[in-house]
Amino acid sequence: MYLEFDKNHGSSTYQRFLLTPKLFVFFYSASLGCLMPFLPIFFRLNGMSAIQAGLLVSTRYLIIFWSAPTLSFLASKINARKCVLVMAVLFGALANMAFVFTAKYQEKTRQNCADIGENVNQSLMTNLGSSIFNHVNTNNSIHFQAMFNVSIEQDIFHAIGLKFDKQFLTFLVIVAVGTFMSSPAKPLHELVSLAIIKEHNASYNIQRLCSVLGWSVMSLLVAVVVYKLPCSFKLSQNVFDLHFGFHMLFATTALIFVVIMKAPAHKVTAKFKFCRVLKVACKNPNCIVAIVAMAILGTAQSAVSSYLFWYIQDLGGNEIHMGLIVFVSGLSQIPLLFLTKYLIHWLGHGWMFFISMFGFATRFILYSYINHPLMVIPIEFLHALTSSSIWLTSMSLAVLVAPIGFERSMQNLFTTSYYGLGMGVGGVLASIGYQLYGPIQVFECAAAVCAVYSLVMALLQCLISPPDENHGFPINGDYYKAGAGSNNQSDWLLEALNAEEEEIQYSRS
Image (cartoon, rainbow, N blue to C red; front, side):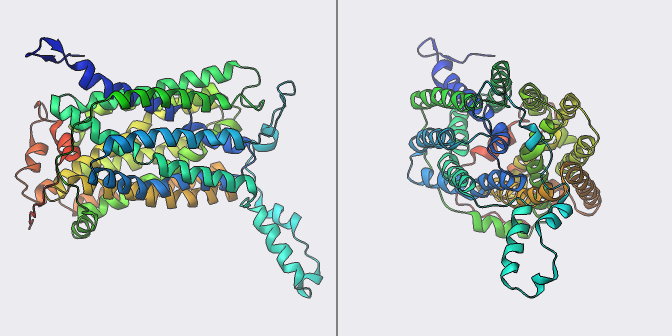
């Protein structure tokens, strides 16, 4: 790792300008990695059904997809990026800590470490039909007594697992408030960090590397610590709370670094361009294909994020297995940080989406056949192709298809499709499927859907010309068409994220 020296003063400026944002990203990602992947298990330990847990997870993304760009836009509009970033990190961590004071674990004492898996390890509605008939009185009298209808409806409503009890509503409020408060943290720290990187000609990939290491390494370490304590997840009231404790510790450390981080002044007035970008996207077949692909991939990822750890627990897995899954899936992203630009150059954006969909189909079909939690770990090496690469692909595509100055807004459109339509709306559908049919059927169905759409994506590559052939784009196209061995290959990424969004209308025929 190189150091950048200030030739005028003869001292290193790396510590001040480059190291601080990297440390912030590392610890902030660590604070999320040690808690967010494990939240579905936390919900399960507190008696949430599959559909309740899925709705809680999906609520996060239904809020993120609009609140993150809106609040970050307002922060840029009033030139208060750093201030809003500090508040987002602080209040987001405090809101997550509210779970500690509202949790009602099914086991209260450390001495009686009963295996609560007997109560939660099997999907509640694998045998939905029999459950309904056990609850519903089929006596002919129900046809003559209207009051029985209400009782039947309530029994069926409870049978599918969606019960708006006090505990669920409390968690729902905490998720909504915490997500809204913390949502601008990620886009703002990217904007601030990238401004510093651009000013000092540093590498964006190194910034992403710090994020990946913070998420994956600290997640595994925290999982090991929790596992080594007596009772583990099956559990006393306080063991899982260590996840929240480490979350607060890392978030506080990140807060220190963001406070001392020097954020360059935002020199360009922010302007809302989402509607104009949407209009441009509707006229471009490459954009339409990308939006649909991002929605499908988001739906697939929601099934993994919400229920993979449930499935691992059903197979007898523990925290170590879960931590290893996060660790392996995180480390698998590292090569892609440096290789995705070459893959895009050789294959094109459409085929990258095809690889992601086909990779998800492969993951899901492999999930449905495993019978031991350790068998999941090698499968997670596909995470880089199914999830991580699509972000770099969408950033690159945004540079090519968006008018000059609209690149970031185009990327926000792709993000909205992924989080809003995919992990939000699609996550709700996945939770219903998991509740009604169980994990195997959901994974098999997801594999079939991803396989079909991957074939459709392959067919579209034969019908739609790639964006760099459709449009002559003298600025953005040059970034993409640079030779694969050129030192400027990563410039398109910084161009997409650091575009100053001038008010320039660029017409494409």
